[in-house]
Image 1 (cartoon, rainbow, N blue to C red):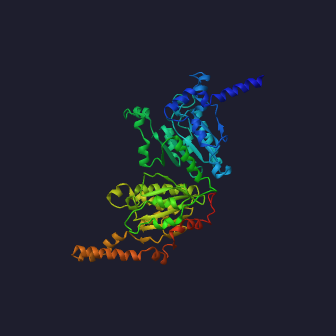
Image 2: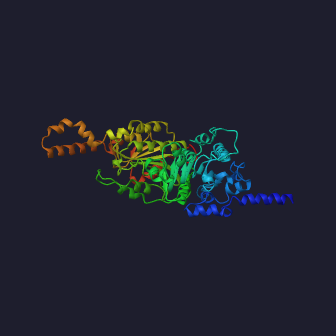
Image 3: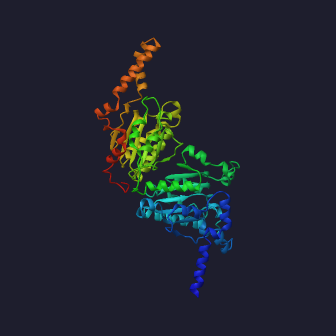
Length: 510
């Protein structure tokens, strides 16, 4: 009888965790257009794979509320943590092991309490010990002042959670998803993640309305603080999703690149690449069309699209193998690398290197962005980060020169020097020089051009000098002088990249 009684108590506690037994809280979430924490969890992980930690925790408020009420109102102390499998159907069970942290906004607005932090600390420790990637949903309002059971601390600033979470850098990959309000400590976890996904219905800030007003800085609505549309433009967000469903799908896809190779893939007609660069070297073209043709169909995922727009960053697959992609977008600033795109690129290269992802760099740039306005953006230090990052790269980088490759900017795109990549190959349309041809002619032949008084004759001479410079800097000449390794048929780009990386042994992403 004793066993039956205790088992019934156990089952009753389990039931209090489910959405079915929290109908009012579940209804509020659905009425606001959001999903419950456990709905997000079930979408993220493989069915029956979850091993939950600390599910019976409640808020440390037993001295102010009835224990039964706490069980109903603060299940799991507002955060679901545990081991799981993600993407096992695509990359195999062996590579699918991960940890999940899902904030529950229906519990005290997703705030961080005493036991809540203990749960975070434990799952983070396990993720670090076993090299597990972590996907975290960070919706919540930050620190919780109402945990009155804790009488052995003053400010509670000796919480190790944030330090432990940051210590995962370079070992356990962290992907954060934000929906709704994400303020203070929740935002700190979001911001420290390696990749940050947010929904259109998101507001993210290092302080919420109460803290701002308490600091004497005025009264604001939560929706006044850190809208995701703003964070998409300032680079805080890597991917802006329509809703929680899309955000979860993107988190799973993003994680998959770090889990290894996919066995099945489909390819596009590679001969199309021969026609995607315009004959007129002054015309732009959509770089993403080239990327989509080269990679396995449907495998390209772009990140931070609307920040640092002159350089595209993201991931794709070749024969199921994951690669990071860095590519100049000649339809933005002519492909010139400004301070923001340099910073974005440097951070992306660092993440690829930390997690053993080989890199493909597709170059079409006139170089670094120049001018007084560029320098106001701290161009010197932000652009120079690319050289620091390139010097530390341990993963293979394959350089594919599509068209323009000029100056320091072109060097920065390929690890700091044309001989840094494991292989440097150009399409026949490649052109090379210490600076843009037009600028080089203006500087190098300033006296000759000034000596021609007739404007039409001067323009004709200028065009002749540019054409001459172009002939000298063509891809085949650069290859003949061993500044690059080869000139290739664009249709062979895909197989050239794979062959160049065949000897790469580091990590599991081979």
